[in-house]
Image 1 (cartoon, rainbow, N blue to C red):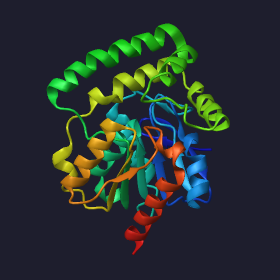
Image 2: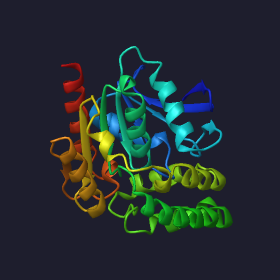
Image 3: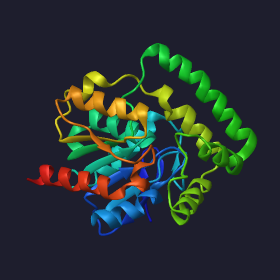
Image 4: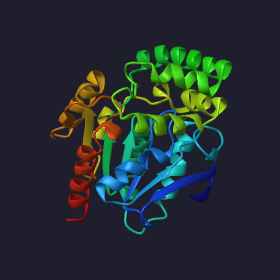
Length: 263
């Protein structure tokens, strides 16, 4: 693990394979960069995976969408050739806004199980829900919250092999309750405005991925791909945890984007 001192604090970066890695990957809520170890192995491609603000060992303050985007932009700014930027779920929202605000830093973009943002009314409603959940995280602590989180139909790891599910749970337990609550308030879904118009004008190659069991995010992947005149990648048999449930399918997308980016 390496540390990048950014203008927002310390960004911890886990690297799987050689450096500089051609792929920078941003994890989902409650996880950290360690979730991409298996994907890097399956893809045969090095991945640099920072711990996003509020997660793992990064020390970014305050924890907001602005500091998340800013810290990742500083990481990408270390590259002489822009890497592929992959974002999963909450990390996908960060990746999308990095690509919108700093397109010159992103060689290609892969959004996995990602929302393009909410309209104003939906954001107001989501703010209420996210604030309530953040308060509950602070009240019950990380361990109880992760147990509840993994019991949800959307975020369950029941389809994973028991060893992989156990490793996934351990990663989730390595964040603090206060950090997760801050991340939910600071760059949960309520924090990100509707970005559909900006998606249409992104200059880099893009891919939109979702597991076919993940109905809501299938619809969003189809919608975002349609905006760009592309076909989404819908992975049979996988749900929201598509990166762990079907790493080879995601690896194929990565290889394809790297080929378009360098070709």
